[in-house]
Length: 408
Ligand code: CTP
Image (tube, rainbow, N blue to C red; front, side):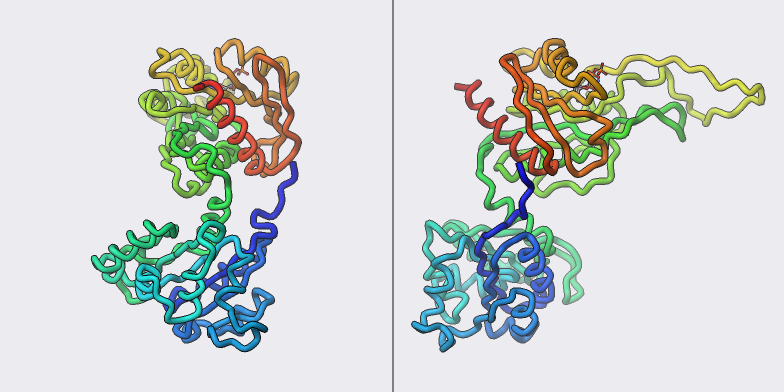
């Protein structure tokens, strides 16, 4: 299972309409090209006031088209030629005026014209709005946005924040990397559409005193990759994360916790509201019986302090024992240092779950790649070394298949 560039051979028309956010389009173009996409840039006249076609041509390696009367096209039909082989048109920035044109099916300029002339069933239209917050909130814009969505376009963002005009509010175009990720997600099969998934991720931290604690090397990367892959597949995702410094994947609801007991208390009320539960967290097995309120001090004797450990609740086993009407379909992870298969199989039994994913903890903690073995009652399947995101997408495919088979 190789980890290919995420947009390899995707043919994208990147459209720019007029707006200050055109300054982000150059970065976006670089991200798309880096991700393997073949990008044709089309700009409106207004967009050329904000960024030059020279820049966009240099970055895409293709002449930029601005006018529908561009005589370089042999048949002079740029609006047809440009979309017939395209997988998607991404308009970023999409101005209020541009969205209004699309809502009305107008074809004042080449970019709007080619959106209208695109093959609806094969070439998706994605719009990244960018405008002042008052323009975004205006009923006319909201009406137009609702209309273009009804007509099948996808609206990405906008984000809230500082605006070029000095105001603060909704209307900022998403950042280049966010738009790239939205496009990548768009092309993923929607295997979990209509489903909900609850995921635990990362280590837990068990306090000894206010400044020290017991934790482990889990980075949370596998669980976060899984949350992203599940969201890309169309699921509603809740991620209960231990103490990690990873960005929240887009469209994922995140609940931050520190200790195993907090993770347990966050998961339990959520579990019956989700179809699938995946426990990727490396939950600390034990915690100090009582955490001191003050920092433990050396007493001069040379002897370290003694403290008792007590066992933490097993979150996965607790969820797996919920009554059937409250119980999500459960998947566990087994992080082992040795005898992976034997331990994974033993955990499958002990926790009473249908599927467990084994990995070698010390070999994967903190890394961006991993190697998995899926173990169920019938046997095991190995997923060879790949990026955690690639493995997460494969795992989503397997889980979707098995979940549906179970529900049938
Ligand atoms: N798990 C959990 N709550 C715990 C301990 C583990 O939910 N208190 C979950 C993990 O998220 C994982 C699975 O149980 O999905 C197995 O975790 P692991 O740490 O590999 O195994 P343990 O059950 O802790 O057993 P051992 O420490 O003996 O290996």
